[in-house]
Length: 440
Image 1: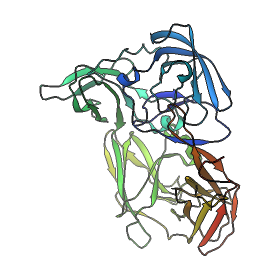
Image 2 (image 1 turned 30 degrees about the horizontal axis):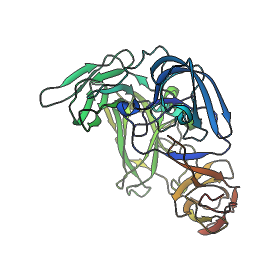
Image 3 (image 1 turned 90 degrees about the vertical axis):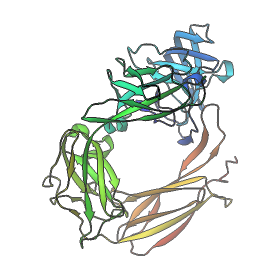
Image 4 (image 1 turned 180 degrees about the horizontal axis):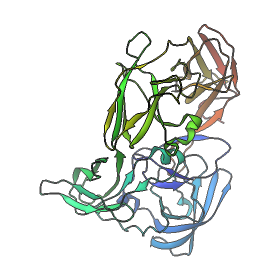
């Protein structure tokens, strides 16, 4: 499965597969420009011949298909961490690899190594100062949810505006573009996507004449649905999660199951909501269509214009057009809730770096989930009169490796039963760890 790494981390496609016995989390600070990436000791295009895990390290051997620098052998071995900060490359796929020599041959999620699509021409190397490289891609929440690459758009006009006039180019057959001879400064890269779509400009900064950059312009469908959610007595229903369902199964998010969710958001303080970037088609609005037992949405499955999904009002969105609800979406009276506060420590009394919790209802329905940094305390609002099981996870620091960013080792705890009741409650739970500061 190919994972799309979002802009601000890497904005490249890498392949991750499998997983370690202990889940881990990481964070990436800043980005690496093409010119900075090319300063690495080893740069080449390689095809993955083999991959295997040894302990906490994933080893990969690549056949060199094109050597740019630092390579004089037919194959190159590289390594990555087995945590989610690692970049596991898929056997049989090609990659543009930036790494170090010898024992520094690490790659990671936060590094510049990227996937090359089958048949895609080799990228321009070395990157040139004053150039902005990038792609234009179609936003697709279904593909993103499946971990699949976004569609790249060929033949689109791309430009940056300068006082002396625009620098203009066009995306190639792979949706790629190069804007040459861009002076230092802050620039907005724009693309012309036509009336049915909208393309948000990408902001790029070239700090000096020796710098280059890469970016991605994302194109969205321009349809929109807007309306207001109110309580059963007519007051604005603020901060209530509302879901948009598609009647076309091809638009369903893979994790939504039978609910067929396309998108979701919370209403604002006045109960207003807007769903943007929609394809032309028919949609249904709902609150808690999954029937979850979460205290932040204490309502039975509720649909706009009808008691069930099948009888709900179909809202039609034309190409690039907005649809406004003719009447407010009215909620039924809310169900009763209570709050469970959980304080987690390790055996020595220290606090975990991170704690998350999820309430699971006895009927299998998901409940509310939340997390907290550094404090070890979380609060979860659940429905009254129902038993739950509390699933807790704590994370403690782990020493980082090159190109992997800050690491935490995550430890799931045994489920904690929560009896049915109506009153708020507070729990003190000691994790089966000697210390929360990463000390062995």
